Image (cartoon, rainbow, N blue to C red):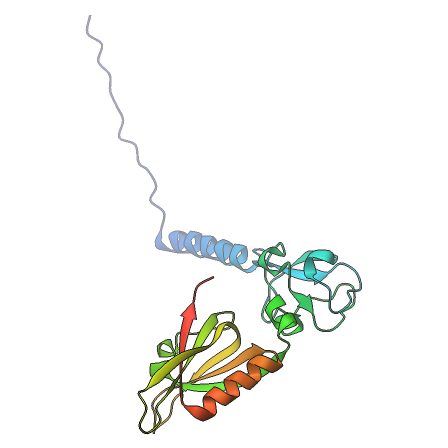
Amino acid sequence: MAVGVHVRNLSIPRPDTRTLLGVGLAALAALLVMWMTRPATTVPVLVAGSDLPAGTPLSALDITVRHTSDPGGLVVGDEIGDLSDWVLVAPIASGEPLLPSLLRPPEVQSAPDLLALEVDESHAVLGRIDPGDRVDVYASTSRPGEPAATRLIASSVYVVDAAVSESSVNGGQVQLLLAVDDALAAALTTAMNEGDLDLVRVGE
């Protein structure tokens, strides 16, 4: 037997524009509160776990980690890693952060003096030399009546600092600070006064 079903027309209320706008503003406000109260991103940095003396490799010192939202000028990382053989040049107190300016690589310990060297970009890997690199130094000389000669002056010299400056006369100039001892300083100074220098960046 067929049963007739009658469906009444239902009237669904439609929210007005002000209601929709209020809901949207409330959601936006909630998102804004969540964004403003979110935890700040922090970065691990190395700090002294106790009073640290100068002249001792970091691997033998009490180094801990602290998290900060402003790591500018600090040594970033959650472990010593490649800095294990580096040493402090001045003591620091417990809780103080390690600063790059207070650290010296082992290469500087064995060659504690600094020699300034300025070379044209074209003779210095087009300026592609950074602190921590090593360079071989070649000297070229040309004397009247003799063939030009080039010889290796120094091998694997540690670059403490490097910068490129522009010159209206010679183009870019590479300015370097090299870690040297007395003998190496004398050899490089003599070579600078006798002829032109060329630098070769060498691998590890």
